[in-house]
Length: 209
Image (cartoon, rainbow, N blue to C red):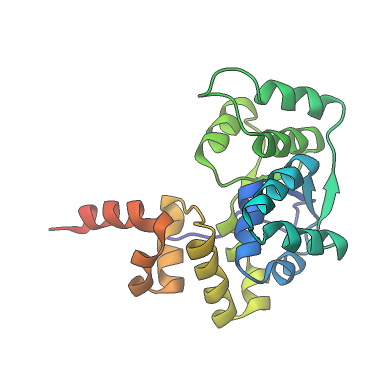
């Protein structure tokens, strides 16, 4: 199965959810990746607060994110107007339909400003498909697989960045992205990536005689 990034040169900006930010920080090359995209990257105050909460557990993400913000690699925006109304709606309701603050804020911002939302989590992806059918989503793998990122990082650095995101941040990978990831990091490394185990098992069952 062939996979290619859904990002195009026509994308005006991307607002990233916490999971995508954490994945990119885990690569060790977040600034280089974002600069290579040449697409403005936005995060909401809600995402910043979510990641800062991880600092209480001794995690490194808050300080790494603070550096990206300080160097203006990413910009931070707060919700207002219609986006705030949508956010409040998305965080309320039943457990099966409501979202966490970071996911809800990212989708609400993307809807108001007609930009892409960087979302990896399955429930948020489903909610976006149900409620914002015209919204375009992008995953961490889409970012890593973008031509400008691949060319800028080069083969060895791209492999290391992807492997770190999988091992450290447990980056989610969709079924249609699996072959690209597997070829990139090598089949011998798949079993060491916790987030890939289900896909590896399902692929083994399909390919078994």
